[in-house]
Image (cartoon, rainbow, N blue to C red):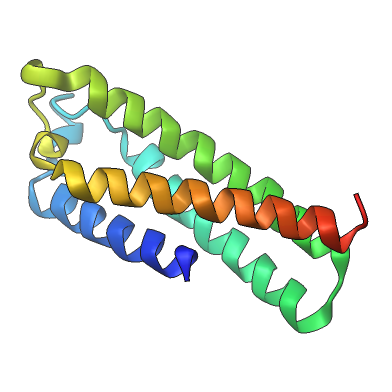
Amino acid sequence: MTWLITAMAGIYLLYLWLSGGGLRQQRTKVTRFPAVLVFAHPGLAVSALGCWVAYVLTSERTLAWVSFGVLAASALLGFTMFTRWLGGGRHARGAEQGFPVLAVVLHGLAGLTTFVLVLLTAAVATGL
């Protein structure tokens, strides 16, 4: 459920960034979010979810840890975007300046909760 909440808030933020001209702003360097960062973050998250579904279907413990590792990489990229978003402050000029604080906080907290739950489940599944 937390993965779904995280994804829905993330899709909303991605929509706002794209509709606000995030891709067009790449050429002029107005945005603080490079396109590779914006698309790698959800790409890794979806890959982690795929590994997690495979773990749930097969009970192969290694897949739980692979899912956690990929999710950790996605979380690192998400944290990078969050700090860039915070750093914009009143000087922000890109499409991300219009992000609603509530959506950013919801996405971050749900993502952090998902991260912890995946870690705990992987640890319990492997007897750590």
